[in-house]
Length: 311
Image (cartoon, rainbow, N blue to C red; front, top):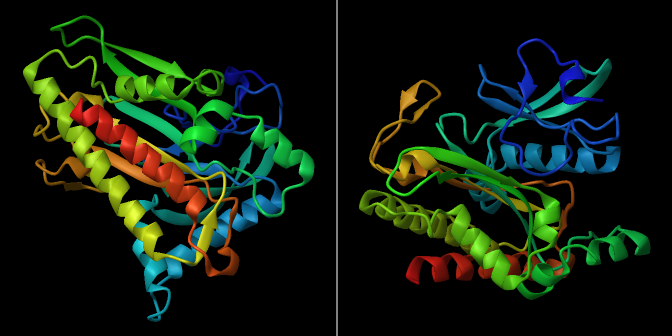
């Protein structure tokens, strides 16, 4: 179904900052992408096939309830690294009722949102996957996945049109681009995404450095959680890295009005967010072991960001 032919409920629209996952543009007429409820500040994610969708819904619900009775305190600590969950919602899209997860819109207050989806781990198939599914997954993103434990399904970034100008252009790439990358290409793409190689002005260079330091801080907090936890293993899960390009030129400029409240304009966490997403393949930890697969990819990502910051 063509993009213009979508039948959406009143007040909802397609999420313009979606960079990966199923979209409305796919040839499969049943495919539904992410929706945005701009008034409520929510992104709506359609549940996947029954077993995967139910697993993801249960994960968000368990996270929401963690710590309420004094148990699962470690799981409760993860909430700050995951988009806020506002419950499920049934909507009729393209004349069919579907269930969506209502999630925090991470880029709601951003003037020029830059967004990257990074899939984590060498292994992206779960314990219940068939032999065929395992082979399919192992054939994807081979170069980066095996060496870094990372895949790049998609991103969008604002870039300066010319040196010493405020004009910008937007660059978008999807999974085909990500599959073509070797390790060096992945590193160069990360530098491009963080505007580390395009920051011509002194203020923009300072903004890019602040951006990289804040991304590192949030990545290291997530790694610290994984080093402690023996509860869950995450397969085919991603990190969503978001920032507002308009803040690079003046990092202290206040543009964040979230849920009706002005945020601390000096806090980079108001315009830089790293969040874990995609939990359709989360399973209890095998034999109480740490999630080495996820941590391998996460440490690789930290190393890449550090190398960009210190070059």
